[in-house]
Length: 195
Image (cartoon, rainbow, N blue to C red):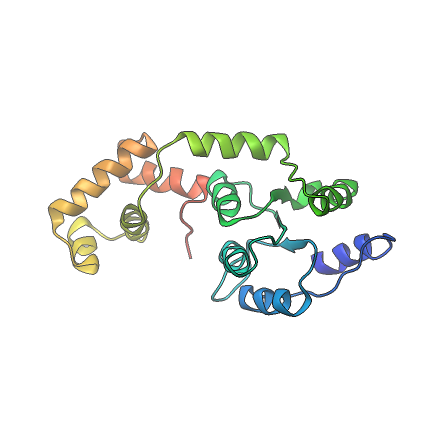
């Protein structure tokens, strides 16, 4: 439905043409190679093996000048941060579609990268905080899955004291004092997802 709505919005524009679409990250990369669009609209929630952020990163690795607009319903600051760090030029929320989308596409095509104020604030908030390391994120995901420290240690092949050290660092970076709050904050910020 979103794709049909986008096509219906963009096709009537005299200076725009929809040259392709994809429903998975891998397919998005293939379509980009085939069509080399001037501007790409990318959704974060592509699957199953490559999401929109990963597809953006892959496209930008191969085509450094690609202009990608992340178009999504997700407002979590960590998703915004990861999308922009992966190479998206801007980040638009689906709820703000309409004239803003057409205007943004034209600005991006002209070399601009307009960031909506609310997205910019969330990005700035995220940049100001220390990031969790990849190992800390692994530990946090396992904690969110209900594993105890010993089980986390066994799963990751590390010592229980090392797990405790990671948990202490996670608490400090997220400014929380227990596991439940750490998981809650991480979910709210889009740092982890629950299956």
